[in-house]
Length: 415
Image 1 (cartoon, helix red, strand yellow):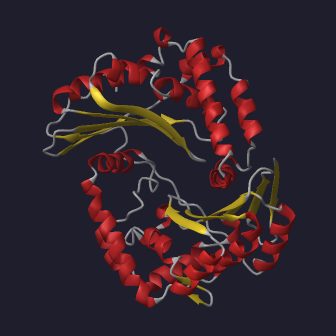
Image 2 (cartoon, helix red, strand yellow):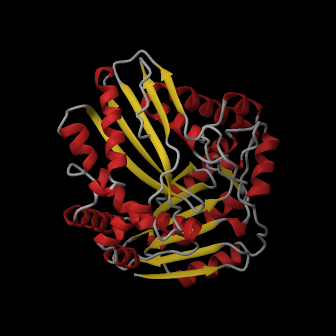
Image 3 (cartoon, one colour):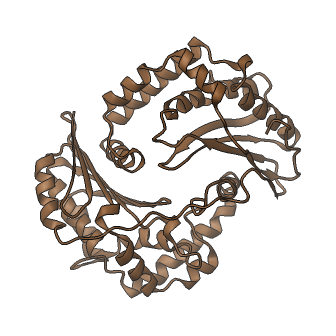
């Protein structure tokens, strides 16, 4: 595999990875109008933008746009993140040129037709209303709201007042102001000719100009707090979050291995201690996610009211133990984590869509794309002594706790 990494004359970073065995080509186009950019009184704007971009662009109305994409077998989707709307598309490699033409129309010339605004608003309101129908997801959004740095604590769904206030003028202005090349990212992976793609995009995007600054970060006053949401249910959902290294930190790889030891499958510590040995819950996990400026670890337990307090106590005990001398990682645990990481790399390398998104996210988070070989080599360099040394200086910081169920739980002393 070879990676072409360049910056087009308009300022947009372009990454193309040629995958010799692939027959498909995937495009990930990151557009800097995510939820964190929404005005405080128009939250939900990014969600509506994400839906509206597939309802006509350039000379094509909604139906004609869909027909044109179907004509080249273009599988496409969009999703709302904090900084970006992520526009993704996959097709046969030979049709990448036409796919890029269609996506360029979406980015540069969206129609945002008046007739599409109200149906899109209703879909957004339905998604927001449906949040309470999924208690685990709802509890997770409460955790994000209370722990993440502002304005990265938003759900992406917006709020009812904001959604109802959004006008077509708001939509047109947000896109025109925010979708700028120097803050966007384009990544292509698969059966792709990097030089041909670069030449095509230079021609299509030559008159595109400007940048859109990232949102200004500010502290979240609720970080480190405890919140309970009362719900008469036979289930209890428990979430805890603490800070972790940013993606560009040298400690990010150590944090990933730490979380693999804690929650990397049926042999992991949380699964063994909380579920298998004590039978306290039906689900337990912990995960690490990182952005350019910060990272976080989120631990979750789904259990019953009768076992909720003990589940929380054992979870917090295990989360604290790994930072102590008593809870040092063993060579067996490290070997298992490394095998898991390498398996994940192999699987991701077989998906052109996953590779395109990974390349784009790398560009955003660390400023350059990484090959699978580079990531594998980084894992191989980690030694047991290095990992355990990291754990002696690991500083999770304040822990934010959210519980949802019939009764409040007592916060463990070690949280």
